[in-house]
Amino acid sequence: MTKQAFSVLIAGGGSTYTPGIVLTLLNQLERFPIKTLKFYDNDGERQQVIADACAIIIKERAPQIEFLATTDPETAFSDVDFVMAQIRVGKYAMRSLDEKIPLKHGVVGQETTGPGGIAYGLRSIPGVIELVDYMERYSPNAWMLNYSNPAAIVAEATRRLRPNSKIINICDMPIDIMDRMAKIVGLKDRNDLVFRYYGLNHFGWWTDIRDQQGRDLMPEIKAYVAKNGYWLGGDYDAQTEASWARTFKAAADVYALDPTTLPNTYLKYYLYPQAVLAHADPTYTRTDEVRAHREAYVFSECRRVVQNGTAKDITYTGDEHSTYIVDLCTAIAFDTKQRMLAIIPSAGAVANLDPTAMVEVPVLFGANGPERLAMGNAATFQKGLITEQNCVEKLVVDAYIERSYTKLWEAMSLCKIVPDAAVAKVILDEMIVANRDYWPELA
Ligand SMILES: NC(=O)c1ccc[n+]([C@@H]2O[C@H](COP(=O)([O-])OP(=O)(O)OC[C@H]3O[C@@H](n4cnc5c(N)ncnc54)[C@H](O)[C@@H]3O)[C@@H](O)[C@H]2O)c1
Ligand SMILES: O=P(O)(O)OC[C@H]1O[C@H](O[C@H]2[C@H](O)[C@@H](O)[C@@H](O)O[C@@H]2CO)[C@H](O)[C@@H](O)[C@@H]1O
Ligand SMILES: [Mn+2]
Image 1 (cartoon, protein in one colour):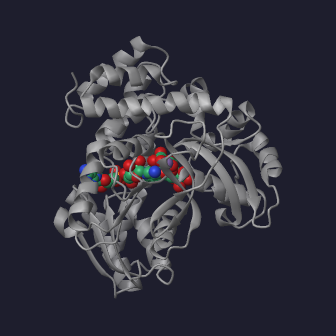
Image 2 (spheres, protein in one colour):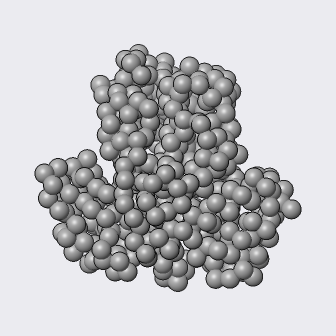
């Protein structure tokens, strides 16, 4: 790509993350110039609240940018260079059921892991495939950076169903953790770290972390994590909600299991489900917190901007979620070969795993997308966990493609978070009813 200004589409314009991405795009125009910004969502009313506020922000900060919000796929996807995808098929109403149905049966209920993640996966697959098809029809040269969860299952589905598409599935969790690691060792942010990492999405480990001069930072970070997990406290965590605080702290227990590596926070759901359940309230789950906090805050800020007719006093900023996706677009647009994480087919990136496994590993990002780096072999503990979880993710995609009840039951039964096949069946049968408007009919 040699263009000097790019056209960007945010698919899932009504997402709570959209204003943060817009603010980051506007902050980084010198690095990543844009001429057009569009929003697309299939809920026009929800998107309009965010769009009305963003129109004011853009008019005040970069009036040269052409901005529009639409529910029409052709208008949205025509003439774009990058699609930033962040849809939530079924919205928070369905996320709530993903969490509450398993909890009713004594099983962890979580957005991207366990039965909740499986249910969300079956809803997301057709939604993301539809976005890919729109992009390929209307802007065949564009790239899609996809945050839509559950990224592991979505990535396996796009690998199987659209193998040649220019979609890159990404996650902000390791990015957030690396910003924390940088703080732990007194560095500015994640860009000061040179790291090795491997696993599946929400299921990985760092094996090496150095500064730009090659100094090994693992011992210092490990000593900190052993005591505090990734919890920094103070100003850094002033806005961090209690449930996230527990997750960052719980990394200490996950780390204890393998002190040769540093873990992703999401491993707590697989390795310590009983501790997660001990804090769970089946009537008030993470969705209820998100609706009361992030969603309420974002939408009330947007309404306030519109009411005041100005965004001059907006309290909102971008964060690692928005800076990461803008960094990725910049790396592709300007062929920087920056080393960043993405979810790609292993093909030897982790030598002793199934080459078709969609692994999360560092890659070099340039104009042709991600170029893989070799992370060596997974250790025995990791290899066992990854192999099982990857088979769960593959079975979910098998179930979707074959419309197979049995494959989905196998996926739930194999999942480490679910105690046995009978419990898996009860949860699955309840989820089939709850997801009747979204899932394919299974036989
Ligand atoms: N990969 C990551 O690390 C990461 C990080 C944060 C959020 N996410 C994901 O980003 C997404 C957005 O999260 P949120 O909490 O802001 O959700 P949200 O519900 O606020 O926003 C999602 C938007 O997607 C829209 N949508 C749903 N189905 C659609 C479809 N088929 N076509 C077009 N639009 C559709 C909804 O109307 C809604 O406006 C979720 O999938 C979430 O899991 C991923
Ligand atoms: O429960 P939610 O909706 O708050 O978060 C679910 C998402 O959690 C991860 O992203 C976090 C990120 O790691 C954290 O530091 C902060 O920026 O918030 C993000 C979203 O809340 C995870 O990577 C995503 O896949 C989840 O959707
Ligand atoms: Mn993630």
